Length: 187
Image 1 (tube, one colour):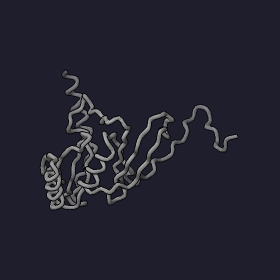
Image 2: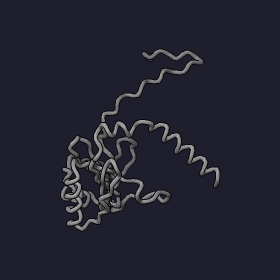
Image 3: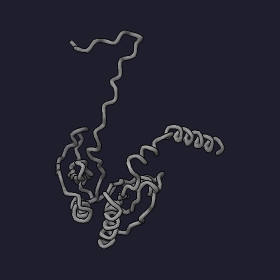
Image 4: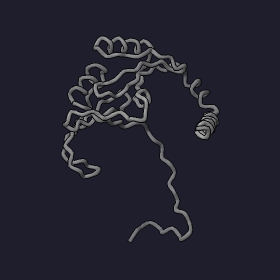
């Protein structure tokens, strides 16, 4: 017998409140080759290889698909993770999305560190776009060996400035939604 009380007919069940999200645990992508990916993230970007999983069966689905899952840890404890499925294929970009849209943005502490990483990447033969000024932060863009677009950012704005940026943010989003609908109706 269930220990939960039944919801009376005609009444909505109580929905639990959202719990605080503590941060990013990991973000996972497919990679072509685990060692090639390790070299890029550990030897060039400086993210230590933190965790390794090798399995033949996917725990969440039960399907047979041999893989290696590798994790690279950032200083805040969050990770970037990759799946090598053993077939030397990379994930395909979305055909309806420009290449600049889907990307991972990582933070460095200062503009000087951003400039140093740009120099380091270029010295390793990696093409870098930027330094791009986004008003509240500056960034550089580049691709990893799997074709994943990465961005390194250095914050310019203070916490107080960023709090100011939040003022009226819902109204700005509502205005964009309205503009988008108007544009769609004219097509």
